[in-house]
Structures are given as C-alpha cells and as structure tokens.
Amino acid sequence: MSRLLKTIGAAAIVVSLAAAPGFAQQPTATDSDKQRFEESLRKGIERVLRALEALAGSVPLYEMPEIQKNGDILIRRKNPRPAPKPAKPDRDDDASST
Image 1 (cartoon, helix red, strand yellow):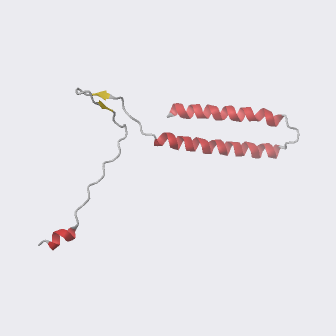
Image 2 (cartoon, helix red, strand yellow):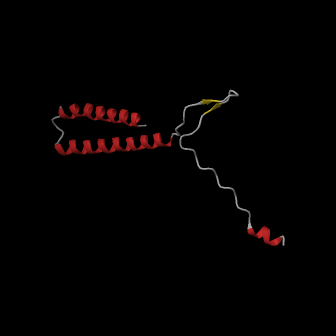
Image 3 (cartoon, rainbow, N blue to C red):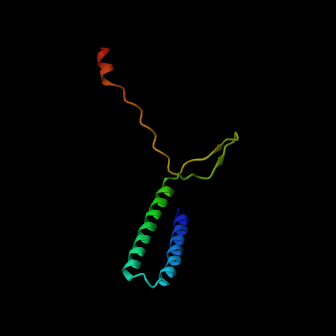
C-alpha cells in the first residue's frame, strides 16, 4: 500500500510541476489567479489521494498460498472478517412450552 501511495504522490508532484511553467508564461494571470489555481489543484490532488487511499485500504490482504497434502490450495486473509454471531433463541418460545 505504501508503494502505491508513493507512486501516486510522485505523480501528483509531476502534475503540479508540469502545470507551473504554463502559468509562468501567461503575463495576464495575476498572483491571486495563480494562488487560486494552485489551491484548487492542491485540494483536487488531496481528494484523489484520499479516494485512492480508501480504495487501497478496502482491498483485502492475503497471506502466501499454502498447498495442502491433498492438493488443495489455501489462501488465508491477513485480517479475517469477524465470524457472524449466532442468532439467540427467543425467550417467548421457551416460556410458552412450560
């Protein structure tokens, strides 16, 4: 996951650096326009990074596959989901049978 975030971070830096020379060449853009653009770009990149981080966090992680003696391949989750709790029997059913 950290490798993915490093790649995304590097891409974000490249995009922001690539956009900077284009604005430096425009004599009509004011400093406030540049600041607004940079702020909008920063916010957009942050949103994309948060979304990608959430996506990467939602992908389950698995351990290395194990080959069993009978030939079955077992792949365990690193963070298994909690087992569902069994349903409790109703107390009313027990009381009505006595």
